[in-house]
Image 1 (cartoon, one colour):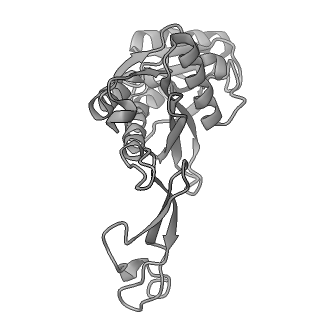
Image 2 (image 1 turned 180 degrees about the vertical axis):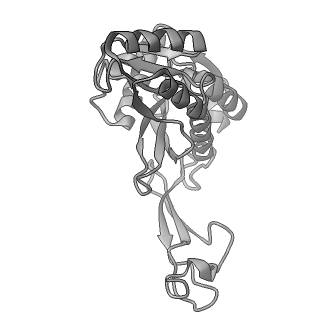
Length: 281
Protein backbone atom coordinates (compact mmCIF):
# COMPACT_ATOMS: atom_id res chain seq x y z
CA UNK A 1 0.00 0.00 0.00
CA UNK A 2 2.80 2.44 0.84
CA UNK A 3 4.19 2.24 -2.67
CA UNK A 4 0.85 3.19 -4.15
CA UNK A 5 -0.43 6.03 -2.00
CA UNK A 6 1.81 7.11 0.88
CA UNK A 7 3.06 10.68 0.63
CA UNK A 8 0.83 11.58 -2.31
CA UNK A 9 -1.92 14.19 -2.56
CA UNK A 10 -5.54 13.03 -2.80
CA UNK A 11 -8.08 15.53 -4.08
CA UNK A 12 -11.72 15.30 -3.00
CA UNK A 13 -14.17 16.27 -5.73
CA UNK A 14 -16.83 17.86 -3.54
CA UNK A 15 -18.38 21.23 -2.82
CA UNK A 16 -20.61 19.93 -0.03
CA UNK A 17 -18.05 19.43 2.76
CA UNK A 18 -17.73 15.65 2.40
CA UNK A 19 -14.10 16.04 3.40
CA UNK A 20 -15.36 16.21 6.98
CA UNK A 21 -15.76 12.42 7.02
CA UNK A 22 -13.49 11.34 4.15
CA UNK A 23 -10.32 13.26 4.98
CA UNK A 24 -9.57 11.85 8.46
CA UNK A 25 -10.10 8.24 7.35
CA UNK A 26 -7.97 8.43 4.20
CA UNK A 27 -5.14 10.45 5.70
CA UNK A 28 -4.85 7.98 8.58
CA UNK A 29 -5.15 4.81 6.49
CA UNK A 30 -3.37 5.70 3.24
CA UNK A 31 -0.90 8.28 4.62
CA UNK A 32 -1.91 10.78 1.94
CA UNK A 33 -2.44 14.55 2.08
CA UNK A 34 -6.09 15.29 1.34
CA UNK A 35 -7.11 18.53 -0.36
CA UNK A 36 -10.43 19.83 -1.67
CA UNK A 37 -10.87 20.91 -5.28
CA UNK A 38 -11.69 24.56 -4.61
CA UNK A 39 -13.83 26.12 -7.33
CA UNK A 40 -15.24 22.80 -8.54
CA UNK A 41 -18.99 23.06 -9.19
CA UNK A 42 -20.30 19.51 -8.93
CA UNK A 43 -23.89 20.80 -9.13
CA UNK A 44 -23.38 21.10 -12.90
CA UNK A 45 -23.64 17.28 -13.00
CA UNK A 46 -27.01 17.25 -11.25
CA UNK A 47 -28.82 18.52 -8.15
CA UNK A 48 -31.16 16.76 -5.73
CA UNK A 49 -33.55 19.72 -5.83
CA UNK A 50 -34.09 19.46 -9.57
CA UNK A 51 -32.53 22.60 -11.06
CA UNK A 52 -30.16 20.38 -13.06
CA UNK A 53 -31.03 16.77 -13.83
CA UNK A 54 -28.38 14.09 -13.40
CA UNK A 55 -28.18 12.44 -16.80
CA UNK A 56 -25.61 9.71 -16.02
CA UNK A 57 -25.63 6.82 -13.56
CA UNK A 58 -24.03 7.41 -10.12
CA UNK A 59 -20.70 5.72 -10.88
CA UNK A 60 -20.27 7.59 -14.17
CA UNK A 61 -21.12 10.85 -12.40
CA UNK A 62 -18.56 10.15 -9.66
CA UNK A 63 -15.97 9.39 -12.34
CA UNK A 64 -16.69 12.71 -14.05
CA UNK A 65 -16.29 14.51 -10.72
CA UNK A 66 -12.87 12.90 -10.24
CA UNK A 67 -11.78 13.85 -13.74
CA UNK A 68 -12.87 17.46 -13.27
CA UNK A 69 -11.08 17.67 -9.91
CA UNK A 70 -7.85 16.27 -11.36
CA UNK A 71 -7.99 18.67 -14.30
CA UNK A 72 -8.62 21.60 -11.98
CA UNK A 73 -5.84 20.81 -9.51
CA UNK A 74 -3.26 18.85 -11.50
CA UNK A 75 -3.41 16.06 -8.91
CA UNK A 76 -3.34 12.46 -10.23
CA UNK A 77 -5.23 10.86 -7.33
CA UNK A 78 -8.90 11.74 -6.76
CA UNK A 79 -11.98 10.58 -4.89
CA UNK A 80 -15.65 11.45 -5.37
CA UNK A 81 -18.98 10.28 -4.07
CA UNK A 82 -22.46 10.26 -5.54
CA UNK A 83 -25.70 9.58 -3.71
CA UNK A 84 -29.21 8.58 -4.68
CA UNK A 85 -32.42 8.49 -2.66
CA UNK A 86 -35.72 6.66 -3.02
CA UNK A 87 -37.62 3.55 -1.94
CA UNK A 88 -35.50 0.61 -0.81
CA UNK A 89 -35.28 -1.90 -3.71
CA UNK A 90 -36.69 -4.78 -1.65
CA UNK A 91 -38.44 -3.07 1.28
CA UNK A 92 -40.41 -0.54 -0.75
CA UNK A 93 -42.03 1.07 2.29
CA UNK A 94 -38.63 2.23 3.57
CA UNK A 95 -36.63 5.15 2.15
CA UNK A 96 -33.03 4.34 1.27
CA UNK A 97 -29.75 6.16 0.66
CA UNK A 98 -27.44 4.58 -1.90
CA UNK A 99 -23.89 5.95 -1.89
CA UNK A 100 -21.10 5.31 -4.37
CA UNK A 101 -17.50 6.30 -3.61
CA UNK A 102 -14.89 6.13 -6.34
CA UNK A 103 -11.11 6.49 -6.21
CA UNK A 104 -9.15 7.07 -9.42
CA UNK A 105 -5.35 6.79 -9.51
CA UNK A 106 -4.02 7.97 -12.86
CA UNK A 107 -0.43 7.19 -11.90
CA UNK A 108 -1.16 3.48 -11.58
CA UNK A 109 -4.21 3.32 -13.88
CA UNK A 110 -6.32 2.25 -10.94
CA UNK A 111 -10.05 2.69 -10.39
CA UNK A 112 -11.74 1.24 -7.31
CA UNK A 113 -15.22 1.94 -5.95
CA UNK A 114 -17.50 0.99 -3.09
CA UNK A 115 -21.29 0.98 -2.91
CA UNK A 116 -23.40 1.15 0.22
CA UNK A 117 -27.18 0.96 0.57
CA UNK A 118 -28.59 2.20 3.87
CA UNK A 119 -32.03 2.80 5.35
CA UNK A 120 -30.53 5.21 7.88
CA UNK A 121 -31.88 8.26 6.07
CA UNK A 122 -34.44 10.98 6.75
CA UNK A 123 -35.29 11.32 3.03
CA UNK A 124 -38.89 12.54 2.82
CA UNK A 125 -41.18 15.22 1.45
CA UNK A 126 -44.83 16.26 1.62
CA UNK A 127 -47.31 18.95 0.75
CA UNK A 128 -48.48 21.25 3.54
CA UNK A 129 -51.40 23.61 3.90
CA UNK A 130 -50.88 24.80 7.47
CA UNK A 131 -48.07 25.81 9.76
CA UNK A 132 -48.88 22.81 11.98
CA UNK A 133 -48.25 20.36 9.11
CA UNK A 134 -45.00 22.13 8.31
CA UNK A 135 -43.87 22.08 11.92
CA UNK A 136 -44.78 18.40 12.39
CA UNK A 137 -42.84 17.35 9.29
CA UNK A 138 -39.79 19.34 10.39
CA UNK A 139 -39.82 17.59 13.75
CA UNK A 140 -40.01 14.13 12.20
CA UNK A 141 -36.97 14.59 9.94
CA UNK A 142 -34.52 15.98 12.50
CA UNK A 143 -34.78 19.71 11.87
CA UNK A 144 -32.85 21.92 12.57
CA UNK A 145 -29.74 19.67 12.60
CA UNK A 146 -30.97 18.42 9.22
CA UNK A 147 -31.72 21.09 6.63
CA UNK A 148 -34.96 21.54 4.73
CA UNK A 149 -36.09 22.72 1.29
CA UNK A 150 -39.28 24.64 0.59
CA UNK A 151 -40.93 25.21 -2.78
CA UNK A 152 -44.34 26.07 -4.22
CA UNK A 153 -45.10 22.47 -5.25
CA UNK A 154 -43.33 19.13 -5.54
CA UNK A 155 -42.12 19.43 -9.12
CA UNK A 156 -41.77 23.21 -9.28
CA UNK A 157 -38.70 25.40 -8.93
CA UNK A 158 -40.90 28.35 -8.00
CA UNK A 159 -40.15 29.72 -4.56
CA UNK A 160 -37.31 27.23 -4.12
CA UNK A 161 -35.40 27.83 -0.91
CA UNK A 162 -32.67 25.38 0.13
CA UNK A 163 -30.55 24.90 3.22
CA UNK A 164 -33.11 26.02 5.81
CA UNK A 165 -31.63 25.32 9.25
CA UNK A 166 -33.37 27.64 11.68
CA UNK A 167 -36.94 28.03 12.84
CA UNK A 168 -37.20 31.71 11.97
CA UNK A 169 -36.24 31.13 8.35
CA UNK A 170 -38.62 28.18 8.10
CA UNK A 171 -41.50 30.16 9.57
CA UNK A 172 -40.88 33.13 7.28
CA UNK A 173 -40.66 31.06 4.09
CA UNK A 174 -43.55 28.77 5.05
CA UNK A 175 -45.81 31.68 5.97
CA UNK A 176 -45.08 33.38 2.65
CA UNK A 177 -46.18 30.29 0.71
CA UNK A 178 -49.29 29.85 2.87
CA UNK A 179 -50.25 33.52 2.49
CA UNK A 180 -49.71 33.64 -1.29
CA UNK A 181 -51.09 30.27 -2.40
CA UNK A 182 -52.40 28.48 0.68
CA UNK A 183 -50.00 25.53 0.40
CA UNK A 184 -46.46 24.47 -0.39
CA UNK A 185 -44.06 21.55 -0.49
CA UNK A 186 -41.43 20.72 2.11
CA UNK A 187 -38.64 18.17 1.75
CA UNK A 188 -35.36 17.15 3.29
CA UNK A 189 -32.19 18.77 1.97
CA UNK A 190 -30.02 15.80 1.00
CA UNK A 191 -26.81 17.73 0.34
CA UNK A 192 -24.15 16.31 2.64
CA UNK A 193 -23.41 19.48 4.62
CA UNK A 194 -27.11 19.85 5.45
CA UNK A 195 -27.71 16.19 6.25
CA UNK A 196 -25.76 14.56 9.11
CA UNK A 197 -27.51 11.23 8.48
CA UNK A 198 -26.12 11.15 4.95
CA UNK A 199 -22.67 12.11 6.22
CA UNK A 200 -22.69 8.95 8.32
CA UNK A 201 -23.56 6.82 5.27
CA UNK A 202 -20.77 8.49 3.28
CA UNK A 203 -18.38 7.71 6.12
CA UNK A 204 -19.48 4.07 6.13
CA UNK A 205 -19.00 3.93 2.34
CA UNK A 206 -15.50 5.39 2.77
CA UNK A 207 -14.65 2.66 5.28
CA UNK A 208 -15.81 0.01 2.79
CA UNK A 209 -13.60 1.56 0.10
CA UNK A 210 -10.61 1.56 2.44
CA UNK A 211 -11.17 -2.14 3.11
CA UNK A 212 -10.90 -2.74 -0.64
CA UNK A 213 -7.83 -0.53 -0.96
CA UNK A 214 -6.14 -2.39 1.89
CA UNK A 215 -6.84 -5.77 0.28
CA UNK A 216 -4.04 -6.47 -2.19
CA UNK A 217 -3.93 -9.14 -4.87
CA UNK A 218 -1.72 -12.09 -3.80
CA UNK A 219 -0.47 -12.33 -7.39
CA UNK A 220 0.26 -8.77 -8.62
CA UNK A 221 0.10 -6.98 -5.24
CA UNK A 222 -2.18 -4.23 -6.52
CA UNK A 223 -4.87 -2.94 -4.15
CA UNK A 224 -8.53 -3.66 -4.72
CA UNK A 225 -8.61 -7.45 -4.46
CA UNK A 226 -12.27 -7.49 -3.56
CA UNK A 227 -15.36 -9.63 -3.24
CA UNK A 228 -17.32 -9.52 -6.48
CA UNK A 229 -19.81 -12.30 -5.79
CA UNK A 230 -21.30 -14.31 -2.94
CA UNK A 231 -22.06 -18.02 -3.27
CA UNK A 232 -25.04 -19.08 -1.12
CA UNK A 233 -25.49 -22.54 0.35
CA UNK A 234 -24.45 -22.56 4.00
CA UNK A 235 -26.10 -25.78 5.29
CA UNK A 236 -28.84 -25.74 7.92
CA UNK A 237 -27.58 -27.06 11.26
CA UNK A 238 -30.75 -29.13 11.69
CA UNK A 239 -31.54 -30.70 8.31
CA UNK A 240 -28.43 -29.93 6.27
CA UNK A 241 -30.35 -28.22 3.46
CA UNK A 242 -28.37 -25.44 1.72
CA UNK A 243 -29.65 -22.04 2.84
CA UNK A 244 -29.42 -18.62 1.24
CA UNK A 245 -26.64 -17.64 3.66
CA UNK A 246 -23.13 -17.14 2.27
CA UNK A 247 -21.13 -20.32 1.82
CA UNK A 248 -18.25 -18.57 0.05
CA UNK A 249 -17.03 -15.24 -1.30
CA UNK A 250 -15.37 -14.94 -4.69
CA UNK A 251 -12.56 -12.40 -4.95
CA UNK A 252 -11.12 -11.25 -8.29
CA UNK A 253 -8.31 -8.86 -9.13
CA UNK A 254 -9.47 -6.40 -11.80
CA UNK A 255 -5.86 -5.97 -12.96
CA UNK A 256 -4.44 -9.49 -13.44
CA UNK A 257 -7.60 -11.59 -13.13
CA UNK A 258 -6.43 -13.60 -10.11
CA UNK A 259 -9.38 -15.43 -8.50
CA UNK A 260 -9.77 -16.75 -4.99
CA UNK A 261 -12.71 -18.36 -3.22
CA UNK A 262 -13.00 -17.98 0.55
CA UNK A 263 -15.33 -20.47 2.23
CA UNK A 264 -17.29 -19.62 5.39
CA UNK A 265 -16.54 -15.87 5.08
CA UNK A 266 -18.53 -14.97 8.19
CA UNK A 267 -16.80 -17.50 10.41
CA UNK A 268 -19.63 -20.04 10.66
CA UNK A 269 -20.03 -23.39 8.91
CA UNK A 270 -23.74 -23.98 9.58
CA UNK A 271 -26.84 -21.78 9.55
CA UNK A 272 -29.48 -21.40 12.23
CA UNK A 273 -32.66 -23.39 11.35
CA UNK A 274 -34.77 -20.24 11.66
CA UNK A 275 -33.27 -19.12 8.33
CA UNK A 276 -33.83 -22.48 6.63
CA UNK A 277 -36.60 -22.64 4.00
CA UNK A 278 -37.27 -26.28 4.94
CA UNK A 279 -37.25 -26.04 8.74
CA UNK A 280 -38.87 -22.61 8.82
CA UNK A 281 -40.77 -22.16 5.54
